[in-house]
Length: 310
Image (tube, rainbow, N blue to C red; front, top):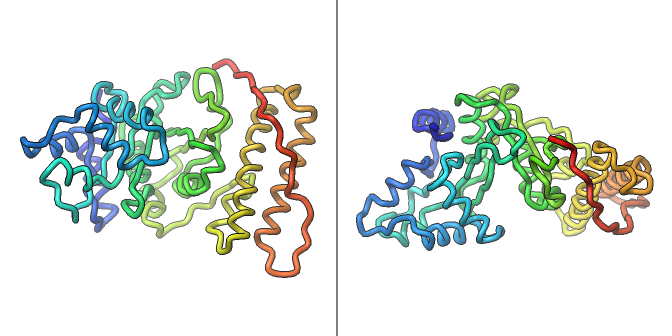
């Protein structure tokens, strides 16, 4: 099986992106670079652990390390690594410091979609490469490679992971309720998202990546419209909206899979949460003398939603 990030596609993408202080390496290029100096150790379990811990500080160490090891032993995984060209990379320690971020893809992570690639893991160092550049490479290779033109992912912590939700939304991903099933994504604490690269031009992919184009995002929770909060109060309102947005997603799942009995009144609950979201959004954008009611809801225990077959 040919790897997802091919030499030719990465070279084309790099040319379109233009000047970049990072080298983007695929699986073969990365391992060759790592062993260029014979004094550098092989990518052992410990080295994979070091790479994961350096770049994935907010994710579980086992998940991150297993994903990196999966690239080495399972051809359904592939990796794209960003190397900071300004950092010396002679010794193994210097090489670790030069790794600015990486993205791991996986084929068939969703068992009901065995031919679909996912963004399985993406990690970047604070102050390092923008995650958009790695996501853009994924979209570009997906569009021009011999694969179905749909990409998927699970957004860890769902809407409450606001920066990541913004980043993926800007790059073309949208919430996708259909990915929740027993043979696909099953974690209620995440948000499944998908993208169709058939409807994205190269100009749009590159423009979204470089920030020269802005995507029109249709977000039914309006969280995306809040942007970057300018005050602590707005930051708190945005946080409240993110929590409500995830609750709204869970009610949408209950409605989609006809699990109305899990909630007393699913339609009423959807309307109530949407009203609270709209109220918080108005409060977020209020300039002065604002008296807006709503936006508070009692915390409810997470309900179990049965899977649809598939």
